[in-house]
Length: 422
Image (cartoon, rainbow, N blue to C red; front, top):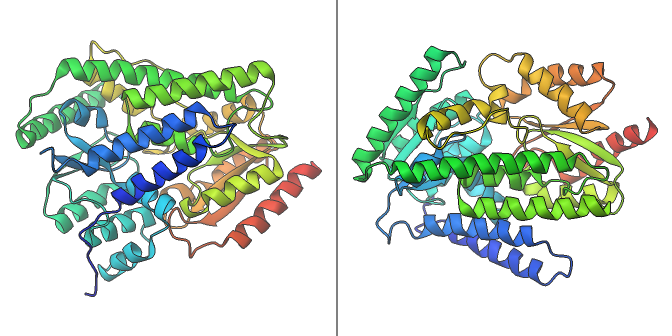
């Protein structure tokens, strides 16, 4: 193999980029307080990761939709593997090296790129070596296999959390047993006993966090919407990295309050809102700035994302923290994609389309994601039944070689022309 390993992770580069962006925002007269708090949140998260070793704290790498509240309660430093790979691409633009490394490991290009990127990132030392690897089967087969590979690459111990497909009483009981066994594993590895009071506090804060996102979604229904075109990416970050953390609550509260003021004044996030969109799945990280510019140019804004920000009903009970963490996993917007696709998915699409008065939908079809791409025709047909067109954009979340900005612009311009003519 010719894999080149560095002794310096990219965590410092992510932090540096956050500080630069924050400084630039502070110089803008129209800067939002919520933006500053968002970058405070990111810096707090990655500072914990950068200083974990010197503070003698365990680092637990984990995949999507893992119950991170448990790690915070045990004073274990979490590292969200997929999001950290995305952040590395978003803030440093460096992806070629880790994808090359993953290819040299023998990972086929058909495998989901964020997961191939994980293998390359750990192999090259682009992200810190974890003490523990935690993963589950939420929400795809790539995720369920990544943990084993990362354990092999890094030599760390790990735990697989088996999440049931459905939510019957017996399956819920099974999930509680899984969570209890995982906590026992983490207690043994960390030498810490679970702080149930702290876990209860975080469950209460997470319930508040979910309610804030619901309030923000309600405000997004306003015309014009006060929400930025790709603002859902920040909502996802708060949810994925900082569940129940004060930094996330501060950011979401400020965002909610700013949006309330804008709605009261009849102001929108764009100078002239023309197209209200529904978004399916993640846009390419390397094109976020480009997509924000083109959104401004054409007055297009994503007002709803059924599988990312549209939380299920219910509340979390801090007096029953473990049951609440199990319950939360069934409330996740992404859970509508887990297990056999059923009427919940269809109903959420139609409900969001009508509630948010959308003009069209964009499906970011990441070419390595079999799980989501299998739904393209189904979702397109559902929307066609209520006379809403959907654009499918073949792309990749982190690999810039799949689609160029020129190709993306051409397709988006044609789609916006179609919407304009309706």
